Image (tube, rainbow, N blue to C red; front, side, top):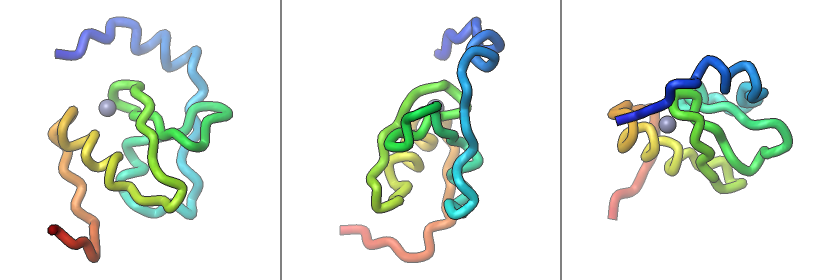
Length: 82
Ligand SMILES: [Zn+2]
């Protein structure tokens, strides 16, 4: 269970930038960037930082949404399961 009781306060004290428009995956609807931290995306739902590779792969972000929030984002065009 989430126990974030100060979400309102956090929202006002934390500056969360939206993802750049070049990041078109709809996973970015659920993540933003904290000030000065472009290497980590911040989940807009639980305010947790999730690191992601510079390659722009959003696999880790998708897994976070799926595991933590049961949000399944399936805009993957080409993926290989081994
Ligand atoms: Zn989250």
